[in-house]
Image (cartoon, rainbow, N blue to C red; front, side):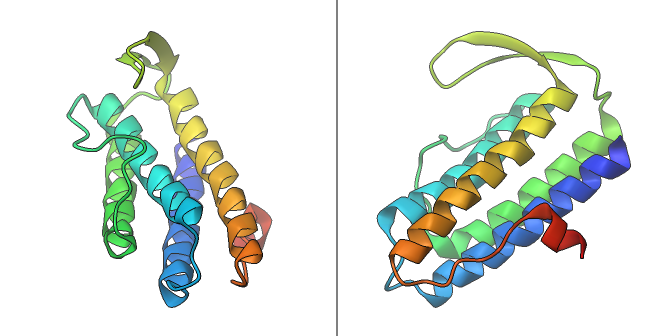
Length: 147
Protein backbone atom coordinates (compact mmCIF):
# COMPACT_ATOMS: atom_id res chain seq x y z
CA UNK A 1 0.00 0.00 0.00
CA UNK A 2 2.84 2.44 0.79
CA UNK A 3 4.38 2.28 -2.71
CA UNK A 4 0.95 2.85 -4.26
CA UNK A 5 0.29 5.89 -2.08
CA UNK A 6 3.75 7.25 -2.94
CA UNK A 7 2.87 6.88 -6.60
CA UNK A 8 -0.50 8.60 -6.16
CA UNK A 9 1.08 11.55 -4.40
CA UNK A 10 3.83 11.82 -7.02
CA UNK A 11 1.08 11.86 -9.67
CA UNK A 12 -0.81 14.56 -7.79
CA UNK A 13 2.37 16.59 -7.31
CA UNK A 14 3.28 16.26 -10.99
CA UNK A 15 -0.04 17.70 -12.12
CA UNK A 16 -0.19 20.36 -9.41
CA UNK A 17 3.19 21.60 -10.62
CA UNK A 18 2.16 21.46 -14.28
CA UNK A 19 -1.12 23.20 -13.59
CA UNK A 20 0.49 26.03 -11.64
CA UNK A 21 2.90 26.49 -14.55
CA UNK A 22 -0.01 26.61 -17.01
CA UNK A 23 -1.81 29.16 -14.88
CA UNK A 24 1.33 31.30 -14.57
CA UNK A 25 1.86 31.18 -18.35
CA UNK A 26 -1.69 32.48 -18.82
CA UNK A 27 -1.95 34.71 -15.79
CA UNK A 28 -3.86 37.44 -17.63
CA UNK A 29 -6.64 34.96 -18.52
CA UNK A 30 -6.82 33.00 -15.25
CA UNK A 31 -10.14 33.36 -13.47
CA UNK A 32 -10.33 34.19 -9.79
CA UNK A 33 -12.12 30.88 -9.26
CA UNK A 34 -9.24 28.91 -10.82
CA UNK A 35 -6.76 30.69 -8.55
CA UNK A 36 -8.96 30.00 -5.51
CA UNK A 37 -9.29 26.32 -6.41
CA UNK A 38 -5.57 25.83 -6.98
CA UNK A 39 -4.78 27.45 -3.62
CA UNK A 40 -7.49 25.33 -2.02
CA UNK A 41 -5.92 22.10 -3.33
CA UNK A 42 -2.52 23.00 -1.88
CA UNK A 43 -3.94 24.39 1.37
CA UNK A 44 -6.15 21.38 2.04
CA UNK A 45 -3.23 19.00 1.48
CA UNK A 46 -1.15 21.05 3.94
CA UNK A 47 -3.93 21.01 6.53
CA UNK A 48 -4.39 17.24 6.30
CA UNK A 49 -0.63 16.65 6.57
CA UNK A 50 -0.56 18.93 9.62
CA UNK A 51 -3.41 17.07 11.27
CA UNK A 52 -1.62 13.75 10.75
CA UNK A 53 1.70 15.16 11.97
CA UNK A 54 0.00 16.98 14.85
CA UNK A 55 1.44 20.38 13.98
CA UNK A 56 -0.07 23.76 13.10
CA UNK A 57 -0.96 24.21 9.44
CA UNK A 58 -0.31 27.95 9.32
CA UNK A 59 -2.92 28.34 6.58
CA UNK A 60 -6.69 28.18 6.24
CA UNK A 61 -8.35 25.99 3.66
CA UNK A 62 -9.77 28.84 1.55
CA UNK A 63 -6.85 31.29 1.82
CA UNK A 64 -5.76 32.40 -1.64
CA UNK A 65 -2.02 32.45 -2.16
CA UNK A 66 -0.10 33.98 -5.05
CA UNK A 67 0.38 31.47 -7.86
CA UNK A 68 4.13 32.00 -7.56
CA UNK A 69 4.09 30.53 -4.03
CA UNK A 70 2.12 27.38 -4.85
CA UNK A 71 4.86 25.28 -6.44
CA UNK A 72 7.05 25.48 -3.37
CA UNK A 73 4.10 24.81 -1.05
CA UNK A 74 3.12 21.80 -3.14
CA UNK A 75 6.69 20.46 -3.07
CA UNK A 76 6.69 20.75 0.73
CA UNK A 77 3.35 18.94 0.87
CA UNK A 78 4.86 16.04 -1.08
CA UNK A 79 7.85 15.85 1.28
CA UNK A 80 5.58 15.90 4.33
CA UNK A 81 3.34 13.20 2.88
CA UNK A 82 6.35 11.04 2.07
CA UNK A 83 7.43 11.43 5.70
CA UNK A 84 3.97 10.32 6.83
CA UNK A 85 4.16 7.30 4.55
CA UNK A 86 7.56 6.36 5.98
CA UNK A 87 6.78 6.95 9.64
CA UNK A 88 3.07 6.42 10.28
CA UNK A 89 0.88 3.34 10.46
CA UNK A 90 -1.78 3.92 7.81
CA UNK A 91 -4.34 1.93 9.79
CA UNK A 92 -3.94 4.29 12.77
CA UNK A 93 -7.13 6.16 13.62
CA UNK A 94 -6.60 9.88 14.03
CA UNK A 95 -8.88 12.34 15.75
CA UNK A 96 -9.16 15.85 14.36
CA UNK A 97 -11.37 18.91 14.29
CA UNK A 98 -12.44 20.28 10.92
CA UNK A 99 -12.58 23.95 9.91
CA UNK A 100 -16.15 24.17 11.28
CA UNK A 101 -15.07 22.94 14.72
CA UNK A 102 -16.59 19.47 14.34
CA UNK A 103 -14.69 16.46 15.72
CA UNK A 104 -14.10 13.37 13.58
CA UNK A 105 -11.98 10.22 13.51
CA UNK A 106 -10.59 8.49 10.42
CA UNK A 107 -7.69 6.24 9.55
CA UNK A 108 -4.62 7.89 8.08
CA UNK A 109 -5.12 5.69 5.01
CA UNK A 110 -8.61 7.11 4.44
CA UNK A 111 -7.39 10.67 4.94
CA UNK A 112 -4.57 10.22 2.44
CA UNK A 113 -6.92 8.74 -0.13
CA UNK A 114 -9.23 11.69 0.44
CA UNK A 115 -6.39 14.15 -0.24
CA UNK A 116 -5.65 12.57 -3.64
CA UNK A 117 -9.33 12.32 -4.56
CA UNK A 118 -10.02 15.89 -3.42
CA UNK A 119 -7.15 17.24 -5.50
CA UNK A 120 -8.29 15.36 -8.60
CA UNK A 121 -11.82 16.69 -8.21
CA UNK A 122 -10.70 20.30 -8.01
CA UNK A 123 -8.17 19.99 -10.86
CA UNK A 124 -11.13 18.98 -13.05
CA UNK A 125 -12.94 22.14 -11.97
CA UNK A 126 -9.85 24.18 -12.86
CA UNK A 127 -9.76 22.53 -16.30
CA UNK A 128 -13.32 23.73 -16.88
CA UNK A 129 -12.39 27.24 -15.72
CA UNK A 130 -9.40 27.24 -18.05
CA UNK A 131 -11.42 26.15 -21.05
CA UNK A 132 -14.06 28.80 -20.36
CA UNK A 133 -11.33 31.47 -20.24
CA UNK A 134 -9.43 30.51 -23.38
CA UNK A 135 -6.65 28.52 -21.70
CA UNK A 136 -5.88 25.08 -23.10
CA UNK A 137 -6.66 22.78 -20.14
CA UNK A 138 -4.27 20.06 -19.07
CA UNK A 139 -5.29 16.43 -19.26
CA UNK A 140 -4.59 15.29 -15.72
CA UNK A 141 -6.08 11.79 -15.69
CA UNK A 142 -4.04 9.25 -13.76
CA UNK A 143 -3.84 6.88 -16.72
CA UNK A 144 -2.21 9.60 -18.84
CA UNK A 145 0.39 10.01 -16.12
CA UNK A 146 1.10 6.28 -16.19
CA UNK A 147 1.55 6.08 -19.98
